[in-house]
Amino acid sequence: MPRKLIYTLLLIASISLIPMGYLYKSTRDVKSKPRIQVVYDMDNQSSYGQQKENDFFADNMSMRSHPEGTVARGQLNADDAFYRGTNEVGEFITDMPVEMNMDLLERGQDRFNIFCSSCHGQSGNGDGLVHRHATILAEGLWAPPSNLTSKVVVDLPVGSIFNTITNGIRTMPAHGAQIPHQDRWAIIAYVRALQLSRNAKIDDLPADTQSALLN
Ligand code: HEC
Image (tube, rainbow, N blue to C red; front, side, top):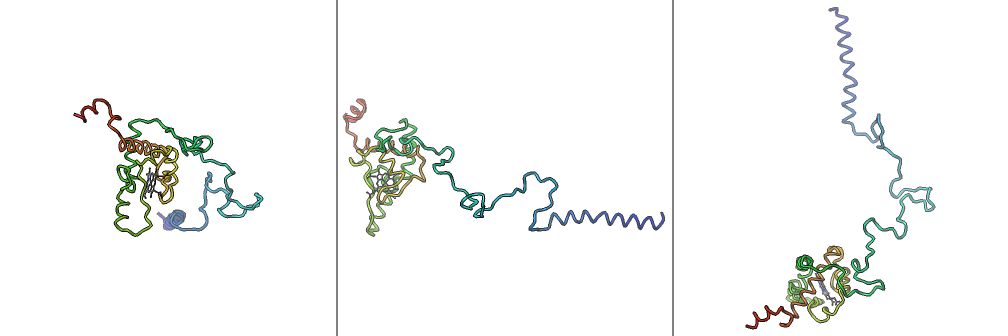
């Protein structure tokens, strides 16, 4: 082969490596500008940044607030009884807005023991661990948790208890953020069961249980 041809081929071979080198370099380089894109798709669209001016709107702000009265999807919560424990004129309801059954009570027991028993005690009579510890510390300013089986709470409408769980009352903290609505009603159902059991008379028991106890 003539020398000239060999040199030319070598030259062509080395030149043909240059584009490959560029390609390799471009995949490693960090640049402030976007890379050259052959197909744009919808990658780069013009949009306003947060807190930026925008003279399209009268207030010159690009960020828009929700129109008044906007409700997020699935959060209308129009059922006052279920979501707020109130009737159409805003009074606390006295009847449970959910179906009472064993599942509800068991769920209520579970949630009550987690969220309420620390203060109100497992039987609801106000002697939870937090209360007992606070009494030992005797640092003052401790308001004892209510006895949930007392006549005062027995006489409270369920809607009022719902409101107490949701928003707290006096020194009791709100639990609305931790406990979903359905669970709040489950807890109330269980509180009612605790009240029944704590204030039960022998006449409240089924006849066969009564006779078994009496004999
Ligand atoms: C951090 C302690 C604490 C926890 C937890 C707690 N409570 Fe209370 N609760 C209190 C205290 C304290 C009071 C009494 C407030 C007062 O009278 O100043 C109270 C009062 C109440 C009352 C009486 C309200 C009234 O109208 O007088 C109800 C009903 C009640 N709690 C239910 C619950 C339920 C149900 C839970 C669980 C979801 C719960 N509490 C969790 C501390 C607690």
